[in-house]
Image (cartoon, rainbow, N blue to C red; front, side, top):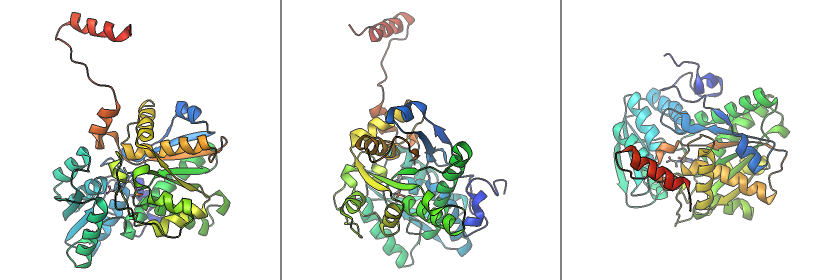
Length: 366
Ligand code: F0G
């Protein structure tokens, strides 16, 4: 169709299909953030804003490939467990491909914008009395029983599409700095992106397109209340211990059993990266910092910037590094979190005098 060869599909040579079910995903902005760059204190900082995809998150890159494969296979029902964004993308791409979609969500823990998307795009939505990890256990069993085709990031075709995030970041840095970034900082939930970016870079090295020593340091960030990957990296463990109780305001990454850890942990280690946990307060501060540069992201996305700030303050990140932070989802995904973090609207009477009186009271703190 019209979008052929654009966005994600510009990288068709690196993908398992020549085209998929598309709504023109990918080709997202790599924003400059000069104030934040100076404030955090690195040589260069760019924000790869995946919230600028069609459904407002990076999941579209995986779904255009994964749903494309499902369509080729002619499967009936598509299903996923989700903290919200995967369900929104699956519902949109499934409906575009003319397929039935089923999503399992942790009851009460999914941001409003994401449920609205899954709902309007026509997914059957099951609200599970349990957390995301329980939803994923169930949907894996449904898939094994032949009830549905699984479109979580355990599906390798999803991660093939998400490789293109890494390819776009490298191209953007090469164009602007004549060098790839020293480090890529990203929020971690199921660690799908960490695994996908590592695969993309390994393939480039194997193809002789990227020097082994130039592979960016993959640096994962989790919320303190849901940080099993950080625990494993800090302990030098080969396996991640499942956390049964997880909590964070960044509901997208409220995950205790990162299923892609076996592929992602080597990525963090082999590239010389690290993993760090940040508080919910630091996440909200980073969300405000990005908003102050005109970039609207959901809480999980801001974790990348919060993590970079923490690692820079600790001296783990050097001041001469060029860094890309991945912001994974749009501000409007979680309007309640945005409103809670931002200014409150002020009620005023419907006359200019009253408005002026309110403005005067606000401008003079005494
Ligand atoms: N950021 C956002 C906004 C997400 O929605 C997710 C995952 C992540 C980061 C973590 O990415 O799993 O590749 O490490 N969301 C999934 C979902 C779990 O269901 O929408 P990861």
